[in-house]
Image (cartoon, rainbow, N blue to C red; front, top):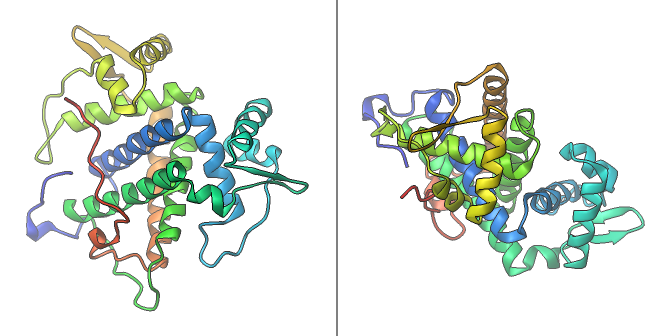
Length: 294
C-alpha cells in the first residue's frame, strides 16, 4: 500500500497519474498470479472470466443468463478460435463450463467450486484493495449510493471485467499472455521499487527469479518468456537484472486506455452501493498482500 498522504491534500486528487497507474498494475499483477494458480494458464482463466461475464451470474439482478458461443468468446478476447475452442473444451471437461445447444455457460455449481470461488473472492478483494489504496493516496472518491445495499457478487463481476480490460488494453504490446503477464509484473515491480513513501526514488533492477515468484511461474518458464520480451525490445537487461524500456507511444496509449477503463469500472462499482468511504468493510475474506519483491 502507498504511504498515507498529507491530510490537507486527502480526497482532492482525480483518479489519474503515476500513483493510479501503479495501483492498476498492482491489481493486474496480483489478479494474473491468482488466475495462473487457479487455472494453470491465462487462456483458461480469461475464457472463464469472459464466459462468466457474458452469462451474467455476477449481475445484480441476474438479467443476462444466456449461453455464449466460442466464436463470441474468441472475438471478445481477440484470441484465435482454435485456441479458445481447445481451452474451452478443457474447462468443460473440468466441469467449469457447461455446453448446451445455445453455447457455453458457467453454472452456479462451477462458481461454488472451492478453487474457482477462491479466485473470484480474491479478485473481488483485490478490487477492494485498489479502492482502499486510492482513498489512502488521496484520490477523490464519491460517496456510496444510499439507496442500495452492496452485493459483493456485483463487485466480483467488475473485478473480472478489470482483469479482462487489462489484457485487452495492453494486448497491443504483446499478445502472448504469459509474456504479457511477465511484462506487466516487471513494470509493476520496477515502479513499486521506485516508490518510497510516495516519492520517486532510484529503482533497482528486477531479477528473473523475482518476476517468476510474483506470478508463481517456474523459473524456466519465466526465463524463456523473458528472453522473448527482451528480444522484442519490451524489456532490457542491466548488469544486475531486468528493467522496462522507455515508454513508447503504443505503451503510453495502452496505459491511458486501462486508466480510462478503470475509471469507468469504478463508476460502475459506485452504482452497486459499494461503500466508497469505508472500502475496508467490503472485503469478502481479507485484504490481499501485495506481491512479494524480496
